[in-house]
Length: 289
Length: 258
Ligand SMILES: Nc1ncnc2c1ncn2[C@@H]1O[C@H](COP(=O)(O)OP(=O)(O)OP(=O)(O)O)[C@@H](O)[C@H]1O
Ligand SMILES: [Mg+2]
Image (cartoon, rainbow over all chains, first blue to last red; front, side):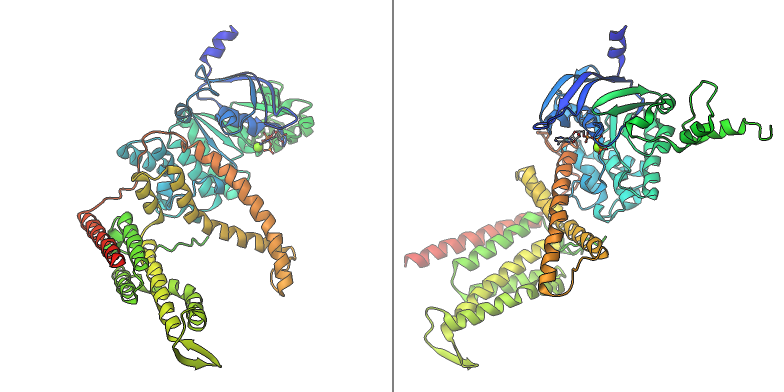
């Protein structure tokens, strides 16, 4: 039974343990989880919990960029990530990082050419290259900026450019590591609008994010990490309804906090996590008893 | 954010030439002026480079470039005019210092060489998109890694300059002296260095990761989004340049033997 679910999963991680070279402690310890194709998964946890490290293992940067010892297994479509060819891996997984400025290649003079950077590296034919670039630029509302120098873009625009550049490579899985943490509210909204489009494309999305109100609107499941260990991997409502959630230093959506304070649970016994759920719950209350 | 770039966008014959053609002109004209210790040869190339700059409509920008080295040129005249080892014939006196003909002529030779170097390279830089030059070189066999370094240096320097001003602003708003006497400024500079270096290191690592996951390390055929065609004109100019270069080298050898 266990085997069957592992086989059908897009990503399956089993007993994954990893320590950075020269580091004293393990950054990931005995992590086991599986993600189905087309699912959206959130990763949360306090600073240093191992969220980025997990992203790097999934995208193959560990062990190709960061060396160190990996134990356990990490597979995409049943194939071992650490030994997969780079070219194949790039076509499977895309990664978007935190800092919008350090993600642009820095070698290209226009937004258009920046998107082309990855396609050129992979030797995509010219016609297809133009087609893909036009598509992603329109998708992320950057088409009007295509002749601008990337360094002239705002943070939100740059982060959308980073997402577009990675998506032009047509990965099946997209990982975003705190994509909005360096953006202002405006840029954050822009990026989340862009992310919500990904779902319609059928891409498997993994996102590390501290803005829980936004995150819960979007993900199917959340993995809560602490000290490199997987504490719980479940739906947002189950994660945030945990009584000891505060112990992991992650906070909770403001709506959940509110409902906990008021002692309001949904009929299924869990606290609401999103705005809509909370409104539904509150409007069901009789005002004057 | 203001983006600094030397490239001047115009639509001229020179702009449309293949970057390598312009690079070849710069290199060959520089080598030739250094092969011949002749002011006339130097002057001929200065004139030819200058006319290229004018026909590319970048003359004004070129003057600005030359302004930057004016002080250096002036100091060459003074030092050689006064102290050149073969100085013998006095020409004039200034504040009690004697300038000599040999030194002044020698400085003139150096000046035409340097000025030609600046103008011929200036034509290349001012009329070529940096990334086109790099793409052109990579298509001709330059290692993509080296090409990336070249392209990003041309692009990232402006960004680093703007980071500098961001950090300076941040420090000033927290009360750090970035103006005032030399000592104050000097210490302010060191306060700036820390965050700048640290920032750059962290960013460099992140950028290395980001380009790696966009396939930078993948070996194999690559494609180029921008067409950089070699036109008929390019081919003729290159042939002409090779001919001029060969003639110059042969002539130089003949002069040397005789
Ligand atoms: N390059 C590295 N070398 C050694 N140790 C590292 C390295 N990068 C991270 N670590 C350590 O690994 C642990 C997990 O770090 P990681 O960056 O994955 O945390 P995170 O959950 O992403 O935190 P944050 O919220 O700060 O981004 C931390 O204890 C950190 O100190
Ligand atoms: Mg992190």
